[in-house]
Image (cartoon, rainbow, N blue to C red):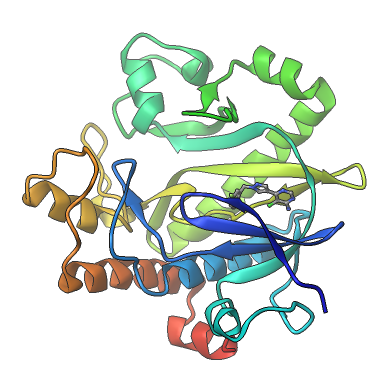
Length: 293
Ligand code: Q0Z
C-alpha cells in the first residue's frame, strides 16, 4: 500500500503523489463561473468530469496517462475511501510540456475578441469575414504558454515551435487536431457542438502522452447544437444556467459570488449529468453504481 501525499491544488482539481511513477488525479465538486469560485459545491460534478475524461480517453485512442480507477493499492483514510471512487484516477507521472494545446472549431471567446480587434497570434491563419461563433472550415491549433501566474499567453506558431521544439510541436499539433476531430464528430452526432477544447501533454519515458482531464466541460466549450446561430453569444451547455442565475440576481462578477440556492445547485448538477448522458449514451446512475466505494 502506498500513501499519497498532496502535491498540488487547482481551482477544481487536486493531485497527490503515489510513487516516483504515479500520481492520484482527483476531480472535486468545486465550480467557478466568471473566474470566481461559487458556493456550495455541485454534488457529483467531479464524478461527471472524471467519467467524461475516461470516456474520451477511450474514444480518441491516443497514448495517455491513465492507469486505473482501482484504488485498492492506494492507502487512504475511511472518509477519502468514500469520497474518491468515481472522481479519481491513478495516472502515470509525466514531465509536463508547458504548452496549452487549444483546438478551435468555432470562433468564440478570446479568439473572437482578438479576431474582431484586427487579429493576433490565435487568428493568424483565419480567413476574413467570420462572425462571432462562426464554424471554421478547418479546426485550428492555437497554443498558449502555461503561465505560472495569471492567464495563459497565446503564442504564434513560430513562438510555440521555439518553446517546445519543432518535432514536439508537430506531434502536439497533429495529435490535438486528431483528438478534437474525433471528439467533435462524436459530440455532433449526439446533438452537441464541441466549439473548442484544451489538451495538455507530457513525456513518459521520452514518449509524448496526453495528460490531465480531457474534453470535460471545464476544459472545453460545449454548446447545444439546436441553439447554434453565428453572430451572437452562445449558451454554454453546463454553466449557462448558473451564469444566468448570477446575472439575474445582479452579481457584478466581483467576488464573493452570492451563495447558490439549492434549486440552482440541483439545476446545475442536472445539466452536468445531461451532458454526460448525451455524450456517453450511458446513464450516470450506471456510472455511479460501477464506481462505488
Ligand atoms: C497536471 C493540475 C493541479 C490538478 C501536474 N500525469 C501527470 N504527470 C505530471 N504532472 C501532471 C500530470 Cl496530470 C500535472 N497538472 C495540472 C494541477 C490539480 C491538475 F493542482 N499539474
